[in-house]
Length: 290
Image (cartoon, rainbow, N blue to C red; front, side, top):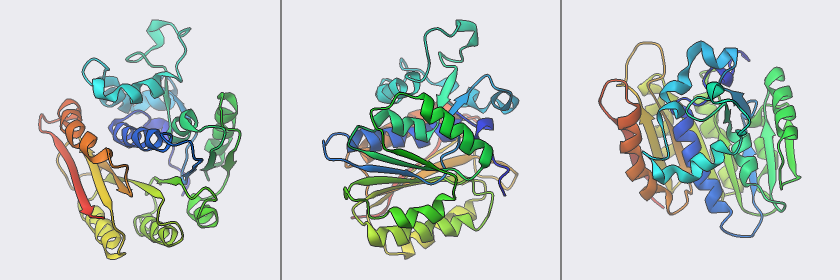
C-alpha cells in the first residue's frame, strides 16, 4: 500500500507535463497580491537527487527533463528558472545531468511561489518520504512561514481545508494510483471539495497505464456536473496492453485563462521531443466548457 517512491521516477516525462502546468497555475495566482492557499494531497519527499541510487536505477529523467533545454524551449523559461533554483553552482559539472543535480517535486515548486501572505498544506502518508519532506522543506528558504506538513492521507485532510479563508486556492491531487480505487476516489474528493469551494483551481494528475480506466475516470468526472475542465496529456508511446505508463496528463478545473493557449502550442513540441517511437502523442482539449 505504501510501496510507491517517486524518487525512482523524478524528472521523467510525466513530471515535466505535471510541473509545467503547475508552474503556470502558481504563477497565475501570484499575479494578484491577495493571499491564496496551496494544498498538495500526495506530496512525496519534495526534492530528488538525480544521482541517487533510486533515480539511477531507472534513469527516467533522461527521457524527461534530461532532453529539454531553454534553447529549444524558450517558452519554458519560467519552468527552467524554478527547476534550476534548487541547484547550486558549487556542484561539479561531472555531477550534473543537463545542468541539474536536484529535481524539485511539487511541494518545492509551490514553495518557490508562496509568499508571506500565502499558506501551504502538504500531505504525505509514506513515513520515510514524510520525514524527508519535513527535512527538505525545513532546509529551503521560504518567504512563506505558513507551510504545514502532515503525515496523513491527503484524501482525508482535503475536506477539512475547504473552503480556504482567502477564497483563493489551488488543490493538486496526484496519488500513485497503486490502489485501483484511487481513480474513483480522486473524482469523489474533487467533486465534494468543489461543492464547498467552486471558485478554486483543481489539478488532477493521472497516469495512462490502461486507457479504459482513464476513460471511465473522465466519464465519472463529467457525470459529476463540474464545468470549466481542460485536459493536457503527454505521451511517449501509443496506448498498449503491456505493463507500464505510456502517457500521463493533467485535468484542470477552473484553469487560468492563459493556460490552454500555451499548452496547445507547447504539447506538440514536447511530444515530438520526448516520443520514443517518432510519433507525437498528446491531448489538449476542453472536457467541459464554463
